[in-house]
Length: 278
Image 1 (cartoon, rainbow, N blue to C red):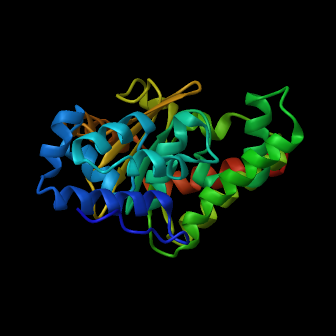
Image 2: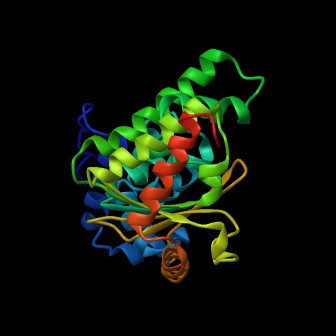
């Protein structure tokens, strides 16, 4: 059997590891499902590893080496592919987000990370970590702004965000920060880079009132759902679970204000903050 191919260090380590996994699986004449079975993961999970949308953790890498007889290649190389500047519970979701063709998100409390301004993000991190050093806060803010550069591309990923009205009314960082943060969102929407809707308080109870929800679709891998709680997060790939969360999101959208009415409300609230009236 030929030795593992050399990877290009200039490429994404996770993408290169995924490409090697695909090469080795096909060399062993196995389908994604056939490789996943002895590893106790789904075929779609193997597909996401190959596409680079999921992290290969060391325990799984060892089992892949055993099943494919790759002489420890994946265990040796997965360390570089699992390094992340994001918290452990969010690292996989952030990597998946960077490869998504479409992102749909419902946010119940805060402006989503991809839409936050620097000052808003800083205020969020200080609130969550009041005893953290300023250097660490700077690092977290920098990572968040790096994520937001996804929107520098004029068309991809498509981002559709539904903000609970509480997101607009919760004063994070003060009135000036809130006014700038909301105007940043409306500017993106006005130039048709994102779609944004507001779920008003008057909508009452709804299917996603338990927490934040994000759906991601890819051109070369099955869709994923990400649900988040206090310091925790789950990236889900089970088709029936993802389908349920898609239905949940559709219900939230159906209960939300139209994009036009939502923009008018967000701009009005931003103006109130700017004049200290909120």
